[in-house]
Each structure stands twice: as C-alpha cells, then as structure tokens.
Length: 126
Image 1: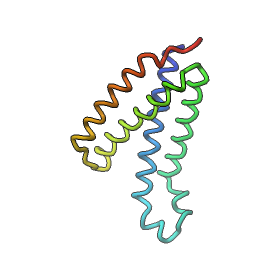
Image 2: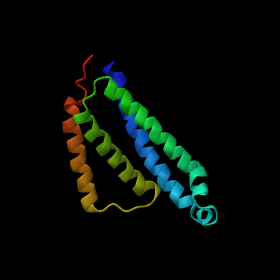
Image 3: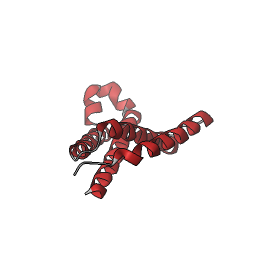
Image 4: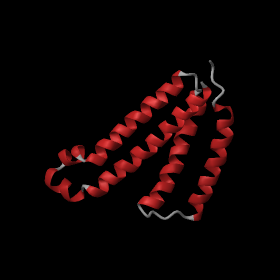
C-alpha cells in the first residue's frame, strides 16, 4: 500500500509540473491569435486545456495520497519543492531559460531539504 501512495504522489508531482509547462507553452503559442480573439482563444488553446487538465489530475492524486494518511505538513513542502525543481530544469531545457550558479545552488539545497523531509513523509497510517 505504501508503494502505491509513493507512486501516486510522484505522478501528482509530475502532473503539477507538466501543467505549469503547458500553461507557459500556451502563452508562447497564442500571442498572435490572442490579439484577434482575446480570451476565447486563450481558453480554447489546446496547451491551455491540457495544462488545466494536468492541474486537475495533480489535484486528484494529491487528494488521494492525503486521504491515505500522508501528512500534510510534510507532503506539501515536498510536493511544491519537487515540482519547483522539475519546472526549473524543464524551463532550461524546453524554453532555453538560463540557470545561473545561484539557481543551481538553490536546486541543491532544495534536493537536500526534500530528501530530509521525505525520510518521514511516508510514515502513513494504515
């Protein structure tokens, strides 16, 4: 049962990060159309729709693991910081955003914090 909780939690983190990446992609791809059609084009943009769906799936997965006894005080920091790292690295790869030394150091500190926090995070009640 604990492996299932870890798996769903990781999938929820990935969907949350994916949602942010898709929303960014939608904002880059609709600039010409937005001027003509305004908010309608933004709402109908397939990347935007996929981003919203990804946020929804992340929320469902997150709710599931919290309902299985995952501690909120530990789950939320790990959820957000893990997603932060994924988005930061994906932004560098997909959108060619440059990461400076300070950001790389921040990633390192966050990874240590996530690891230390996660040591007790999955001590769930059966």
